[in-house]
Length: 189
Image 1 (cartoon, rainbow, N blue to C red):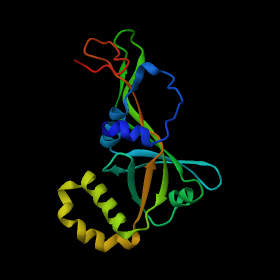
Image 2: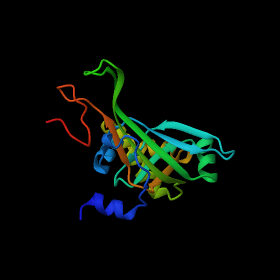
Image 3: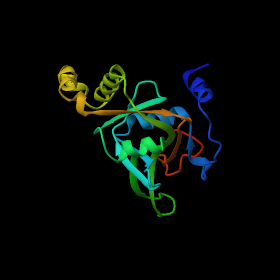
Image 4: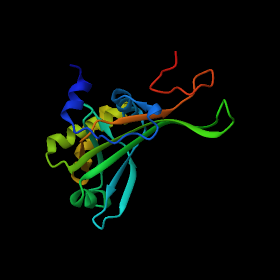
C-alpha cells in the first residue's frame, strides 16, 4: 500500500462532491500543488466568529503535517485558540485566458484545498525542526546561517502545526495544445 493510500485511510474523508467533477484531480496531484505554491491561504475563524484568511508560507516534510511561523501574538493565534479548525487553499499556474474554442473570458488554474486542525507548537525541538523545514523550502541557499538566525529569533517566533484532517482535493482548468479542456484528470501527452 503506497503512502497516499495509507494517508487517505488515516484521515477523515470528506464526502462533499466537487461541483465540476470533470476538473477534479487526484490527492497526489493536490499535494504537489500545495508543495509548489509560493503561499497557501489559511482561513481561520476569529473568536467573534468572523472569518480571517491570510496567505502564508507553509512547508511540510510528510504531507499530513504543515507548518508556518508568525509573531507570538495576533489574530492567527487568537483564532486558533478558540477555533482550531482551518482550511488551506493553494493555487498555481493561474492565467487569465480566452477560451480557445468559444472565445470566452476564462481562467486556467491548478488548485488544491485541504482541511486541518491548527495548534501552537510548544516543544522547542519541534519548533526548530519546523523552522528548518520552512527555511529549507523557501531559503535553501541560506541554510548555512540557519542556526545563527534561530539563536537570534527563536524566543520571538511562534510556530503553528496544521495536521490535515482530510486528504487534499485538487482541481484544475487547463487546455491542451489543441484547445481542448483536459477533463477527468487527463494530462497532456
